[in-house]
Amino acid sequence: MAKTETKDPLRMSSTQAWVDYLSQVELPVLANTLKRIQELTDSSNSTVNELARVILNDAQLTSQVLRLSNTVFYNQTRTQVGTVSRAITLIGFDAVKSMAISSLIVDTLLARSDRSHLLKCLARALHGAVQARCLLPRRNEQALEEVFIGGLLMNIGELAFWSCDTEQAMELEQRLLDGEPALASQKAVLKSTFSEITRGLVEAWSLGSFIKDVVSAGKANSSAARLVRHSVEMARLAETSWRGADMDNIMGKLGRELGETPAAVRDQVRVNAGEASKISVSLGIPQVRAMLPETMPPGADEPEPVDPTHQDPNLQLQILRDLAECLTDKPDINQVCQMVMEGIQRALGMSRVALLMSDRTGTRLIPRKVMGAATEGWRDSFIIERKGNTPLGKLLPGEGCAIYRPQKGAASPEFDQWLGKVPALVGPLMAKGRVVGLFYADTAPKGSEPDAAQLSAFSHFVRHAQICLTLLAVS
Image 1 (cartoon, one colour):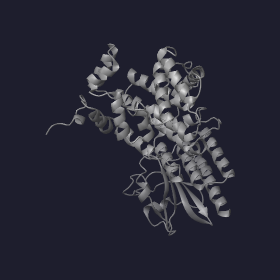
Image 2 (tube, one colour):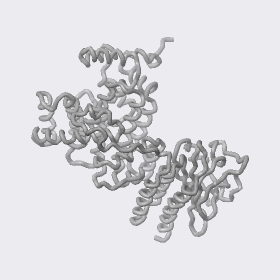
Image 3 (cartoon, one colour):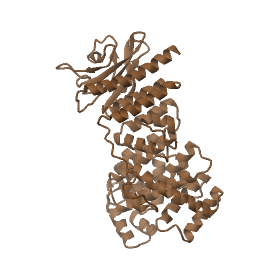
Image 4 (cartoon, helix red, strand yellow):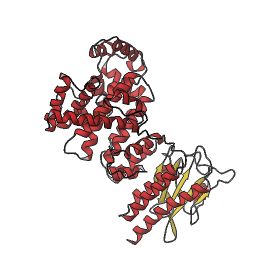
């Protein structure tokens, strides 16, 4: 049987072979995650929770999104945001979705390669995306983020290619260093072009109709898609100079799209380039600033690295303030509980968190929300009988929050090797003197026992959920 091209990473010889290879061999996790996020197109409550869950299951992604949420680029009110749930509420579903996609692309690709061509391509994509977002007229949240992601993904084929350590990547790199024409070199080495591979990936990864319009071979159908194309082309030209016949031409095209004079557009894009430099730092790629037309001084506005696995008293206070603010308005129990869980996980350094609530029969507590690695099995199986006559029944607390300490020889359920066998924080939600819910948090697989400070902070978080439940009961 003839060997398929996708099983030989050294020589791809068609567009489809590259699409299959990048999707199935090199970047399957990125492809699947982008597809999953792109499918979240409705900001209904359930979808908001799904987006928050995708982000919160990745500690680095959570850190990146929250860092971006506190930049003026996204958060012009300058209201500090401490949780993903709060970011979605204050800044918007589409904006947080955009941050998540941006962070995923940057983190995934840079973890694979630091090749100069990849960094240059990332710088261009980011610059073009920022320009499109800043220039877009008649702004609404969805359109803003659509053009931003369109700019970022317009050359996803090239980005994906340069992140892979293949023989053809080294061969193409050498040809370009030797000064050979880019398009001819792509055809000679790849038997395809970056544009063709991009169109294939957009289709295979289900990246949406707008991005399909942006990367299509023909004329763009919408003015927004044309704006993205012009912005990315301008970013490419700006790598060498803001002047010249080609740049004048693209300024004229942008001016016609925006109803502005080329001179006015030129002034605006110079300002926007500075925004791209700032965003590169927030995305964790300060090294691309030197590749952007305007850069910040080294170290300016560079955020301190965040370690989400340790207790953070300042973050505790910030999230508790956010919770208090939520309770003064019309409290939403889903949003409050989501913020409580984020506070427990991120500010207290707990690996896994769950909220269980009474089922319809009132005899069992079943999962409503879960958060953290290795918690997918909890959704169907983490069930506590209210009578407490099962091994997990020992997790039921009394009237207040407590540290669960496993007894010697405690058994764990088949669906999870740590539940019941590692120390945990447990806290009840009460209604009319009866337990109707349970917050659970542990540090598995590390399995360390929570200390008194963590228990105290946990109690504060749970109390806010209890206040919300009580307010709803009397309203």
